[in-house]
Length: 417
Image (tube, rainbow, N blue to C red; front, side):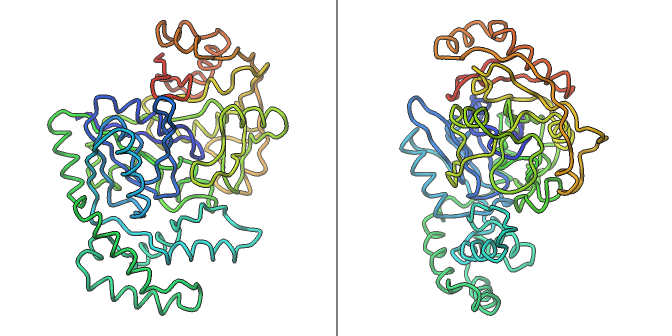
C-alpha cells in the first residue's frame, strides 16, 4: 500500500509542485488534503510553467486528482485548474469530496476586511478567504459542497451569515450563495467518495500521492502563530484531510529548499537582505505564485528544519533549488540558535530574539543545461564537490537522508543520492 505524503518543511514555497509531480510518476492518484486557493503549486512542462491553486500539481503525472474533505474549496479556482491542466496534458479525472467546505465571495470579503482592521498588525494573508472559511467551519456555520447541492441547510446558513456580517461587508450572503450554487452545478459530476477512491487504489497495490499545501511552519498549531495558515500542514493531516486511516500512509517525503523563503509577516531568524538576497530572489524567481509578492530570503535554518522533520516523521528529504544557490562565492547554514536549547521556540517573541550561529561553506559553479544533462546521466557523483559537501552537511546536521536533489526547474531536473 504505497501511500506517500509530500509535505513542505519550511514556510511554504519549497517546490512541492515539482517534487510531487516527480514522485508521482507511475502513481495512479494525486490527493489534495488541506488548505485552499491560497496555495500555488508550480510545475514546469517543457517551456510552459503551470501554476495550480486547488488541484494537486502531481496530477500532471497521474492524470487523476482527488480533493479531500479537509480542503477549503474555491469552486471557481478549481474549474480554472481543470481547464489549465486539460489544455496542458489532456483529459483528467477529478473526484471532489462533498464534505469539503466552500469559499464564497462573502469569505473573500471578510478576509480583506479582517486584514484592514488589523492594520499594521496584519498577517499578510493571500486574501483568498481561507481564514473566514475556517472560522465558519469550526464555528459550525460552514457551507459544504453537499449542503449546496442538496439545498435547505444552505438557505438557513445564508440567513445566519446575513445576521452576522450584514453590516460588516458589502457582499450579501444571498448573493454569495447564489454564486456558489451555479458553480456547484458545474462540478456536480466530479463529486464522489474520495476515501473509497483512495483505498481502492492502495488495496490494488497502486501508488497514491498525498500532496500538502503551504509548509510546516504555517501549521495552525505547530507553526509561528498567529502568522500561520488556517489548516494543519503537517503529514498527519494527510489522513484526516483525505478521510483515510493512518495506516494508509507508508512514507513521508519532506520538501526543503536549499535556502529558506517566507511570504508575508512573521519572524524569520535567518532572513538576509541586500545584493545576495536580491541575487537569490532573481535566480529563483522568488515571487508568490498566488500573490506575486516578492518572497523574503534567508539562509538554510537547521534548527527549524530539525523541528519540522520531527513533527512530520520524515523518512526522506527532497532538497530543491540547489541550482539557485549556485554562483554564490560562499553560502551559509544556520546550525544552531545561540543560547537556545531545543525544542524550537514556542512563541513569536522568543523566535524574534534568537541569534543564528552560521557555518560558512564554499559555493559552487553554475548548474546550466549541459551540467544538468550530465548530472541526470551520471548522478550524484558528478555534482560539484562543494555542492556535495553542502548536501552532506545538511544530512549530518539533521540526521535525515536527502534522497532527491532538485537541479533545475523542470520535473525531470532531479538526481537521486
